[in-house]
Image: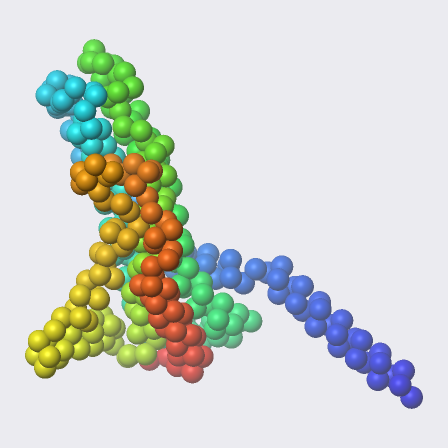
Length: 314
């Protein structure tokens, strides 16, 4: 009497195990991220264009390199290191700023675009959950863009170093080591900075992602106008600027927490060259502002998942 029931139960459990194994082999999160890159080529094209423009400008500036080297201070002084590091630091800053803008506009269109183009009907017909889809979209500004910025910046800086060394060699100028900044140290600081900025800006990206799944149009206004209106109401009613200060700190306030911007002698550190000794990961990870922002980002992701589950095409 129990044999058929047991066989049915065993077959049901076996079929579920097979389905789970097939689902894990298809790697839905991986292919969802690949889909985002296929559909949004601006994610990497904007960074490549910015790197190409900067490389062209740097190549032209090499014609004045021998004269500028003669005007530099002796190699023993700290400002020389900063001056040598500036072109390489500017490359990283340009790509990081480009990635921030790309991440903001991508997040604003992440859920709204598939509703506007009605492709959400097709993607919902596939065996991919809303959780997987939203996490794939959230990973673009939080993971993919920082990785792309780091890889492209490292390659760009290597090309810049080769170009400058070859130009100095052809012109007969010195190519000794003191005339070049420590690139490896700068790249480690860049990697740390990109991780810091991704975590610090996560609430901004996830707020934009949440807003993109709700309005029928003008997602940028819906994302920007409410916080600015609340900040204006606070100032008019109470003559305080707590919300405005919080928003500004969320944009630019990570540097004073993640870095020691003053050395042991009390001298300010130039942001173009930050030594490894000036990094403060412990203070950054223990900052209440970081964890409050990540909690807010998690709430926004949860809201975005629910919106995608129930919202249809526009």
